[in-house]
Length: 233
Image 1 (cartoon, rainbow, N blue to C red):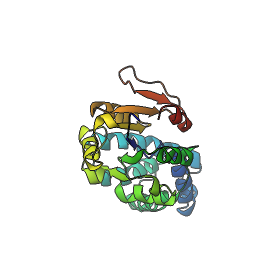
Image 2 (image 1 turned 90 degrees about the vertical axis):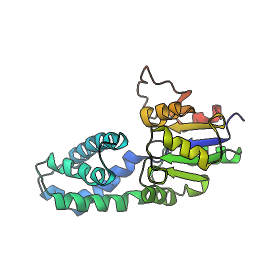
Image 3 (image 1 turned 45 degrees about the vertical axis):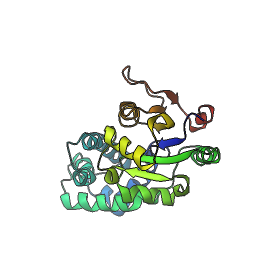
């Protein structure tokens, strides 16, 4: 085998963040009675939350905002779009969200099958994730994925964030391996693919949404379904 160590991203690659976040926010929408507080449509609220979450995560990974600010401001800005300026509610819902989200179990199709296949072939599987340490480990446990992975490298444990080279260097050292024996597998062209390339790793772009690839980002491989990893590894 050319590779011995496979580094996976978690959210949006294996664990279906969109589906799990939507389920969680639906529960919060109902339990916090947002329909009675000038937010009559859940789908509209979810769209605004997703919009702000994406942009704040981008700022967080680039070092422009801190973790705590990301956690509650995505909720604050979503509520504010409906003229609900309630900081206390925003922070309360943020806590509720992070408590409930890791309990969700939606995975992308073929996740368990491909991880079993790769582990049985003798690969060492690891995670590199920008997610919060406790949250990510809870997701793995509740989705029954923990046993597949040898090491779980988070931005908190590594003191760095994808796409920074330091988090990949930390992961390679933690797993006692090198670039030539390793490959990065993820859905984010900037954080996972360009980050992996910058660290000297081969990469597999998991293009679930079949989005156009930027001209300047060149993954080693591109797939649109996890099953396709069997043809590569």
